Image 1: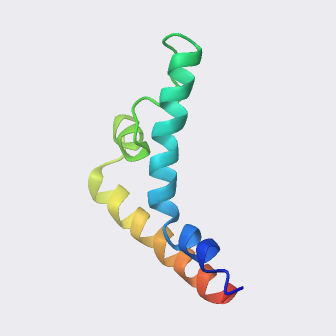
Image 2: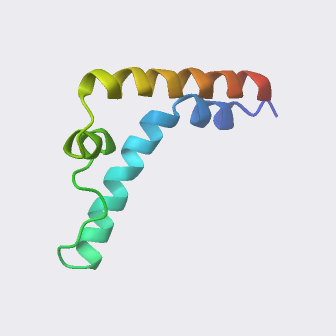
Length: 76
């Protein structure tokens, strides 16, 4: 009734995506016997191996989390 599980998923979007990236990577790796979707899981390591610096990734994830929190606040 309060839509709190939906709000939690939205607010924790980065954490959800990080966990899903690991699940997707492991499942795909097992199904294809060695092929990968990401260079490395979790996703922030994929970004690092793609050339982004950690000093860029962390503020980017903060900004995404702030946007997701605003979206969740609008839903409530």
